Length: 371
Image (tube, rainbow, N blue to C red; front, side, top):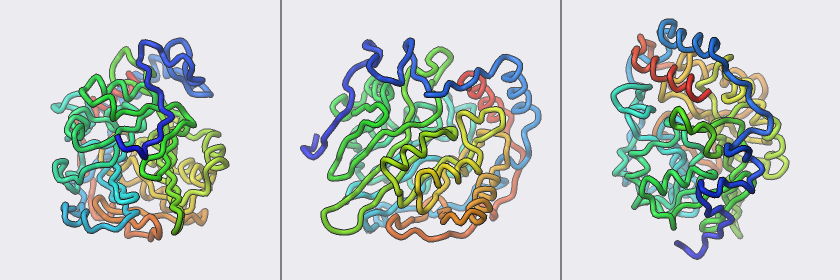
């Protein structure tokens, strides 16, 4: 491990329960304001709607056009470039090193690859064509953010994995070198090659099965690059989260942010405590003292009841109404983080079609067991 990795991470395991964490109680992690229980009948209604009332426009009729990336293009990309690869997967170049957020290259965001929410589009670049990674940044352990097959393929090429508490233990159990794994509680962080990473709060939940709910922590991430010469850069990566007072506190401690990568998708009135409506996304960006808003968590998987284009349309209208600078890159399109630009509404190129029953059923199943 590089000598420039200055860590404040936890190195314990689930055996110690991370009992010292303020987020830990009775063996599970929790939000400062507990989320209400879903209840049997409400869960049943969600399952019914997902199985029988899924709107036709929940998925596009044809795969959205992506801009294919090559290793040569990435090798020539200037520092502070961002490429959106899908959902919440971003490839970011900082101080000459490549970082990837919540990498999911699987065909389905699911515990199995024969059922579950299927990708709308192929990744802009094959997993094996990625450049060697300085690090992987993980927000939590849900299947649309933490993909076993992808992580295993990155085990050798990535130099460090930064995770919330407990998520790193999953990686170690999957065969990732423990020396590469660093786990953090909220407000803890590390510095890698002069770039500071801080695990900041989020309002969400965790789990990958019926019996491990909230056994690992969830987090957003603050990324700060302040070179001795040249302009500073501050990024915020939301991971998954409902709207909560923590955004304002993060903004006070670390803002203003040059770019916020904010969850805008897979929302529903039935689960407001774990995913934001677009109005809340824009308000959270303002709370964070953000300059440019880049909406993520959309455009790749069908995970809710809304039209697949709705998050883009709603956040675009709200940003215009509130004077928020918005950038919406196509998958594979480069964003200059130092000087972002508005981009064309690419999502309007595709028309909706009928969603698959298996995808609807799997999404409903995951909603039932997790939310």
